[in-house]
Length: 315
Image (cartoon, rainbow, N blue to C red; front, side, top):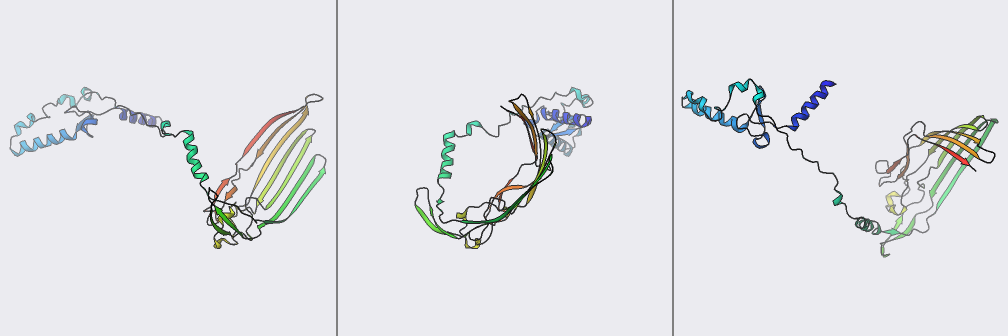
């Protein structure tokens, strides 16, 4: 781990300093990427090319004695090749100040934002749907069982069948209340959305001593169809097709409270609750999509495990 930190530190230092060409002394920001040689020597591409060109010219002429007099090579101090400490020191690069992702100067004034939103919202068409009725049928059961005074069981069950009664004919208007056209909404026998039509619950509470009670609850939700706008059901192919049905789910909650008297006329309650104990992932609500399936629906997930605690005084 220490080696890793050292390497990161070296890399940071390398990024902060520039390399100098050993021959022309130009920094990398001016000469371009350097060619690295042993003993921490760096040469720019221009000097390297000039050196090769000079060597080729001298050798082609057969004049080997002039090799040591060619440009850029005569300035090399051979002793410095063995002692990299004699090289010119590197200079720090100028750090660039990062630009902010969002510039506050570019944000429009509040009244301009409101005007833009008004253009979008107010400019929408609307419809006055009349004769839209739903038939609600179902059955509900509740029961309570107390085998002893300190222990109680409660249960409930509800099964519904809620459907829209008829197709309807309606007129669509623009924002100026001018009629745009008339349409048919195909809603007959389509289940009402946005509410679970199958629910059940089971709870248990126990009071081990006076004033102190603990409880556990299980709640189940099923047969819940995504919410939808009836005026969007104008395609005859949608006739009789339900909106997307959300997956069934159940949650477990725990609770505790203690009631006691502070004085003869003042009472107090200390309580604590844990909701969705098992951190169940579930979809609590949804808006139906064009294909009436999970791929096109807009979903809203429920909360994971949450808790609350408090102290209440009753005068």
